[in-house]
Image (cartoon, rainbow, N blue to C red; front, side, top):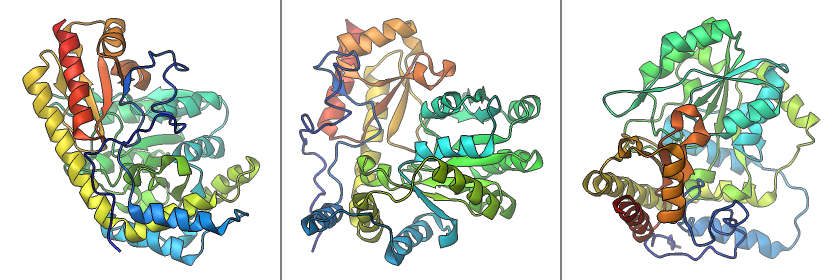
Length: 393
């Protein structure tokens, strides 16, 4: 049986499918006819092997409580070894309904109300939300944009914030969403050594680990034994294989005490087994999805290159930040001279696009927009053309 879903140019109509991306513009206060390239899912059909596995399981007709068995872990283990040269152990594994729920669990497990939790803005906005919603304080060591059009860490500020705010927990985004960085060994060990010295637990969100286009993804916990002892590594096939709504993530916690505290939080929240379809999809993805993954990766890489060429040639005042990882491209509109609100109006009401406004990623994101390029090339081209026309007007 061959992979069937390799035609990424075909436009799949997602309207009327309960799609958060397509069916909820009006509820979110946007015009109903906006073209959505905001939330991080793809407009590309997933692997036919995943499709077939789900259909086959659905035919059984009984959906009682379910749990993963040994082949599930073996497929996860093989994927991590092949793609990231990371040897995971089954005793490290905790499954959650998503990475964001794992972030929330970590906040509850490792900090007390009022404690500061460190992030690196501009960053994936649920980081701040799960900190604030659980009565903790958001502390940011803000990334800075260098002359090389890439974001960098300020290690002096990072350590200063840890000391001054008595930080116990840090959320690392690797690869980084939205700025597209794939952190280097030097950068990760720079912050890792600081965290070890000051006894800071690191939750490393590595959900985009398979979506690297420059450089190499390095698993934070795998760089040094000392990092393994302070790490909660969050992974999922959801971004890689476009199966986000199946609500499943694989969280790896090597340290027994950290894992015990995390699992106690899960128990307190009443979480036990996940839905069977998520388990089925994950096993099929990691065991049979390689051909689809490679084809998708190449297609998205071409979309990123296309976006860069278009921005440079057709969008004066806009620059695309140097892109290394994720399928979420970070566009800097500050050269247009538009205010944050004026930019928002231009994107939504003139260009008729639904992107993610940079301001939701933190104060340092103002003047930026995040665009999802994991879609058919014709859709991406249409979106960029709408921006060009809106700026011209």
